[in-house]
Image 1: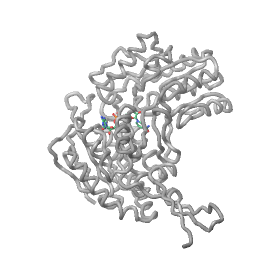
Image 2 (image 1 turned 60 degrees about the vertical axis):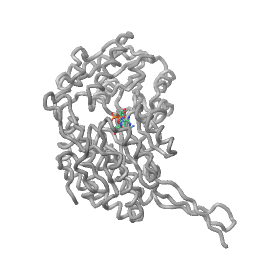
Image 3 (image 1 turned 135 degrees about the vertical axis):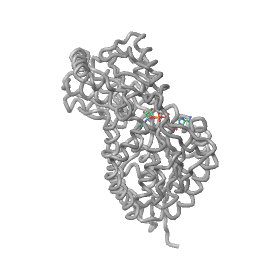
Image 4 (image 1 turned 45 degrees about the vertical axis):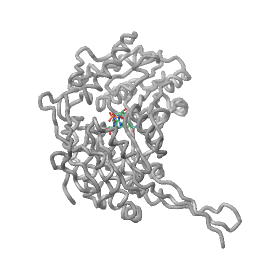
Length: 491
Ligand code: NAD
């Protein structure tokens, strides 16, 4: 298969063919690199290119949807094998482009992308087989088939760039749809690498196209994709703000959509919790990938009786790991800057407003934050009230907020008082913690474990403004099929 991944400028992929030039190019820029901030130039697709990509996907649909389950399975298993052998190469590619942490990048490739491919391969034949129910004694028979939608548009973010781009197309492809991947302007080459992997593994030409867009054209190009008549289903992973815009366009076109949006994961710490474990996991969950994970631990709800010892443990962790935390912004591969100067500015404003409203820094130091260079330092803020911005808004930064409660009911009420509902955790004796977990409005609740936990075999998706629809496993394959019931009667 063609090697398009190393071309410069970074090409788009229309019907399996690299698009190597365009009227507009845009640059991927990493602010923490200072003078050498530009990483590479990228081909920006026009509306015409986007429409051609969908036409090619529509053309490839009949033959792809008639492939047998073993044929599809073989491609995903081959891709998993190839990826295992390419982890180092792809970690380099990802971290060069995004400056994300090397270990996080290795994690998303080895522990999310590889098992994601394998799990999907494993469930294809069970998830997609039809049913023959016998509904009554009339002699009529029913056949319920699961059919692909057609062309699926997947829109991906940058923050776990390889896995989230793969996730946007993996379940749809496995279910027999053909796909358009609309990449993030922050990680277009990493997203293109997903297509390279699948084509190298034997994906037939045209089944997957990759559309990049310069930020100034993203609305126009994305709307053209959403409204193209051959696009029959959309999935979007990204911020709640942009998800709302995409959902409104999809509603205009009456097209079904999966929304995987922002989070604000609460972690409840009951008075019978292991404080050391709860504090350690809170710090890891809040600081991993510099707080830029949809499931990042964001709100600690701690029993007022143990707040002091919990904070002392957090402070001890901060002083023992000073170096690791201070290193949080050296590029590349160790860079733990926030993604853009704009996102750093926003996170810092949320922090400042919360401190002005009376909350206090309990660990860390934000005085040297340098938002122009996207630098926001890890901090823990205590005394946060539910009405303060840090409690309400996703900071997408290493800023952990601490609020106290005095009863189990209050803990649940506070955990559910945020508009997000993606991930949560409860620490305490198991039976009591599970009782609380069952009352939390979130797609995933972890008892005595970190909020950042995802596995390709468990359904992933949110409640409330974290979105709707599910990826992964059988649920993910069902999400990208629609049923057709055929009833049969004797003439
Ligand atoms: P984002 O919303 O800025 O961008 C996501 C995608 O939308 C990108 O492809 C981008 O090019 C596109 N986009 C941006 N503005 C657009 C517009 N006006 N019209 C059309 N498309 C537009 O999000 P991000 O910064 O890339 O990612 C971070 C966010 O994603 C966080 O809120 C995080 O919680 C969320 N996220 C959610 C999940 C999940 O599974 N629920 C997973 C990862 C990230």
